[in-house]
Length: 338
Image (cartoon, rainbow, N blue to C red; front, side, top):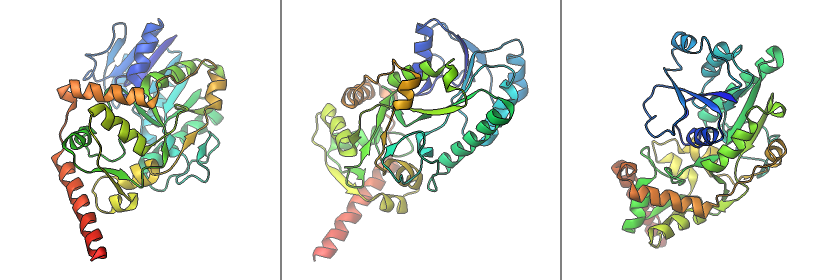
């Protein structure tokens, strides 16, 4: 199979890149070349900015592909550009959407591909829905061979999935755990969540590539395992060798007192219990099985972060904000009990 990935070096796409090269496929990566050092041998690099349509047209002038997948398309303008570039260049175009596009809050916690798409809380999700609408219109009217893939919370050894963190990533949460500071968990921590390791996601994604039954359709790729947010943080603390100090805070309160987009990422996503039905994926890719348990993958990610100083990005602003939230709640409790 001859494939082109736009991006190809992110949390989701890196594992797919590795898997396809191991399987002997011919893989091209179109990116600016800023993160290609760690790629396995065999990928063919097309160095360029996908936003430079004229340059990309030159790069692919003599190329045609079985599959083109865009991992960095977020707004309708991006997929409109891709349609112009690849409508006569590929047998399948895969758009990476998001499971956050599903109805939020959900009317049923069991999510299937038939769950309505609607998220009034998060612009990111609404943009993904708009992208899907455009691409399906091109499929219906022009025969553009699109497949829509919806990841949920996908992580790798390089990313520890936590619910509430700052703009610099999860390290400050781990650091606070090691220091015995309060760790903010949205809600009461008992809502169910699905974290999917990128190795498992890659298996499902590869099975959809070149799959004639996936054309004109949408499918999510997630683990079948559900865990609570309390369990996620308990696993992280256990790997750190500490006893966690949890501080449960309503999501609506966190959104009201922060400049982070917790309205979108919490109210429109992580605060809701969701359990994914993967029957459709398993019908399209019968061999798909998610084999990395949450506790295994989370511990691996924590160990990676502890062993790699470059992953330890401190976030003093987030740290101070967490302390303020904890102090404010302590004052409220004291006032009510006085």
